[in-house]
Structure formats: structure tokens, C-alpha cells
Amino acid sequence: MLYLEYLPQFDNYGIKMSELSHGSHLIKLKQEDITSLVPEVKLKTKIGFLLGQDTDKDGTKYYTIDKDYVKTCLNAGADLIFLDYDNVYTQLTGCNGLILPGGSFNSPTEFYADTTKSSAGADKRSFAYLKAISYAKQHNLPMLGVCAGAQMIAAASKRKMFSDINKNIFFAKGHKSASDNAHQITVFEDSPLFQLLENKHTVSVNSRHSECIVDDVIQQYFADSDIKIYALSKNDNIPEAWGNFDKNILCVQFHPENLAVKGHQGMQNIYNWIVEKSVEYQRKKARELKTPLLRNAKLYE
Image (cartoon, rainbow, N blue to C red):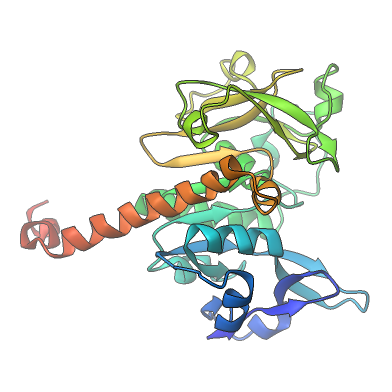
């Protein structure tokens, strides 16, 4: 077992990448860190969370997770199991849900609608996202994607992306901003996100992305996808949320954890959703294990 440490130089939690160079490890938060962030925490179910990365001034590389992610997940009741980039399948074993956070990395070139995109090609972090998504799909795990994590889930389900919003959408506004209220989104009433955001048709969100998935009009020229749009940016109709209700997939282009820690209940509800769906998944697994016919189902296939 390895534990994340608080890293004051980044004001987040993490672990040196070099500490994971000798095989697979279970990575968690220390109990004292958990209770210091959320004193009355009630952990409900194990959820895999893919780590980000940071580099110290001396060149030391760390796997990291922003403190706002930690606090929001703990408030929802997530017992976080952290995933590094080399041991995704092993570390996800026993998890009942998956959270894919935002971040900056090179995605596969084939994910993009703009064929002129130049890139160094998909990197190790990108493949870790794809491995996690593959595992989740194979095991029907509920998934929550945030920003780049949301884009990867969509692209892995055949939704295309633009590599540069400003170059491809000339009327785009406010999608790379430090503001908590960068722009407004219009939430579709028939989407599960509508209820999570307290039945509001219009919500102000933060926005830190330079890439985006294409809208339905453009997507029709590519392959069909089971990912549906849940919300659009109010000013320019860029997709801001999507998912698959039947498969328990929810993706948001913004960062609800940053707003949740400031008291926005609707944003906290997004993280509550992944915990609730993961608890349902855990209970379903438990019922199947208690049912001999289902437990031995492979004998009859």
C-alpha cells in the first residue's frame, strides 16, 4: 500500500513517480488527511481516480490530484483508489466506478475532426485514460469525466473533437478563462444533468479548455455514437456536457469540483451522482454473487 502526501509546492496531494517504478501498488489517501479535509466523512464505495501529474522545480515528477477533487469526492462519499499510468487494470479491480479528471496531454490524432491537427501523437497519460475507459466499458462501471476526461470518454465512443476551439469555431467565447463564471451553459431538460443542477435551464460555469467535442450537426458526418449531448454553451453552442443515461456515463466540460468546494450544491451533486451510481453497481454485484444461477451463469452460456 502506498499513500499520497500533501505537497505544499503544488497545494495538492501526490506521490513521486519514482516510488511506483517497482510494480503495481494500491494507492490511497492517509486516514488523517481524509478526516482533516472532511471530519465527518462517510465513505460508501470504492471509485478509481486517474492521477494527474506535476513537475517540481528540481525536475522531480509527481503523480498528483488537486485538493478540490479530493474534498468534493470525499464529501460525496467516494473511497478513492488512485490509478497510475502503468497499472490501471490491476488498480481498478474491485472498484465500482471511475472518475477521469481534466489535464493536458496529447490525445490520439484520429480522435479529431480537423485533419490538419499537428501533434506529437498520443502520450502515456492519454493511453492510461483509454485503458481506464476500456476497463470501465468491459465491466459496465459508471463513469464521470471532467474536462479532458470528458473529451476522452466521448472520443473513445466515436465522438469527434476539435483540437483548437478558436481556430475551428470563429465565434467561440470564454472557453479558456480563470474565472469561476466564464460563461453560461444551457442544460437540456430531458437530460440527467438538469436534475443534478437543481432543475436550472441556465447555469454559469468555469471553463479552462482549448479543445472541444463537435456538435451534433458536424458529428453526423462521422460515425454514429451512443454519447448524447446534455448541455451547450449559451453563446456559441459548443457542447458542455454529454453522456449515456443507460450506461451511467456523465461527462462535463467544466470543473464542478472548484465550484462545489465554494458551496455550489448543484456542482456537488455531479460528484454525488457518480457515488450513487457506484453504490448501485456494488449492490448489484453483491446480489449476483448471492444468486447461484447468476454466479454460475458462464456454465450455461
